[in-house]
Length: 438
Image 1 (tube, rainbow, N blue to C red):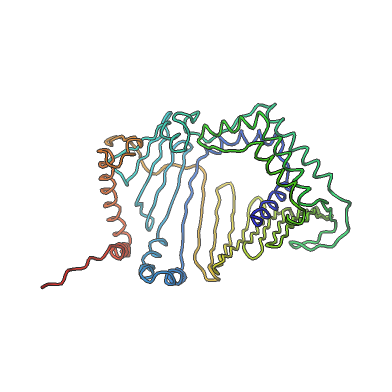
Image 2 (cartoon, rainbow, N blue to C red; image 1 turned 120 degrees about the vertical axis):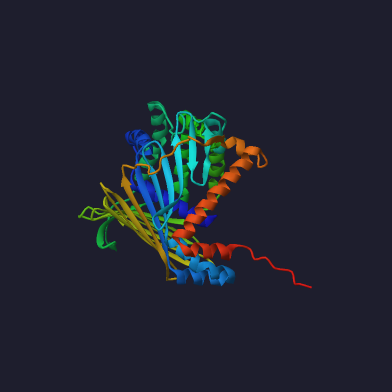
């Protein structure tokens, strides 16, 4: 529990140090959500695996599974996934050697969605509002406005009332900033010459944060947010009484029983800045750095002997380095690069396991998506997803038969495109033992 607390505490302070979100920013973000949800484009996903590394990992766990590795790696390395949205409808296509194998079209209508796929070629699955709300855990017909991204609306007065405690909290935290100190601290290729210490203990900081959070939770606007989230099936339980309990626990906790905290803001004449959070306890140390150097954003998180993340970049390119160390001795390293431009984006992630190359994940995105398939309900039987709840119903049996037909077609196309696919299917089929003749 203390380890989790230390990490959450460091992350919270680092995020708070980057910027404070104004009411105008929140309003702009709310306006941008529908536009982002309605944007069109295509994303291509490709995975390339190293057969030797996969064989080594699988062989250590299961000898039988290791025998199938070459065919599995061949399948994955020739598999392509593309996702396209035209701003209204969407599709997912799985291909082998650039030959489409399975497609799934999602057509949005005013009060329902249709799912059409080569996997069930004679069926059009219908998802109405009642079914969608039920799948999300809400009440039938509760999702407002059809199938849209959840949008939480608050009045200007409610927003201002909720922002007020957080604004005061930021002011109180700023009041804890001490006098500037002359230093020479080298970080991220530059030298910081000014340090502003933030003088407070973990307990003092929480004694400021928790009452502010309680005041937000007690607001009429927060209650409105909770109710609106329930309409989308997101039931969140968060009350002022819960925070009161945490405050009581905190007041009865000694300073030495909480992780020690060191906060500081570094800067120099070049305009570089860095917010540093160091949280130490008997069990674990956590360090978080968040700031900007030479116009590039820097975020680094280090959890002693378990996790390390470094992200650096600007508007056009961001690099990522991550290491995850498991207690079982498994160490995973991920190095990534993300590039963005007007014509789209690209991302490449290289993965290593215990210093051995496992594989590469590649993502490419382009704007202005156009669905490649011609999706229609003509000649298909419309079946509500609600009618498939009963596994023994006639509609369910007919749907499963349709899927079996679709699978047979897909498997035939896959075997023609990739001969090793049939080898894999044969290896996966259970072997039957013949009784000895008498």
